[in-house]
Image (cartoon, rainbow, N blue to C red; front, side):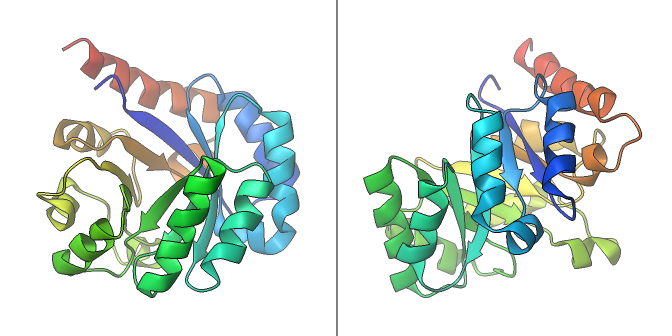
Length: 215
């Protein structure tokens, strides 16, 4: 339980709002995700500014790469990201390029499994060398009432030496079951970003992790 991390997903916000939110919550989160929407709006400037402002934090650039793996991964790492994302439905060649660049740059690649329903495909990606997987219920799916649950972990059952991240409507009610199931990176967006008091919301989630550490 001691390795459980909170990844704060920043999306549909200005760079200034992102920085302000992290300022309020930085003591209770571990990884900062520059969301795809923020990157599309502001480019690598968003990643560079976040790295400059929070040098001690792990920065995730949610590139959602599906082609041009080497180029886009270099963009992310050269801008200060520690982790970049690539879609699980991408060609193997693209995923391999991202993994190669990550090794060169001493970074990590998070495989976004949005839309992947076949565990065989996940095993194939694992065989390429991927070790960080994100089980992801997308924003549009959440609007249809689908939220992240521990049942998502069926996709990664039996894989050795992996880290599991989960994203998709995570809140204080869902979080304990994810921790119990072995999720190590819990990605939280609107529960914190949409809160009237982000500091209290992030503290609540951090306290849940602390409770599990003591068990």
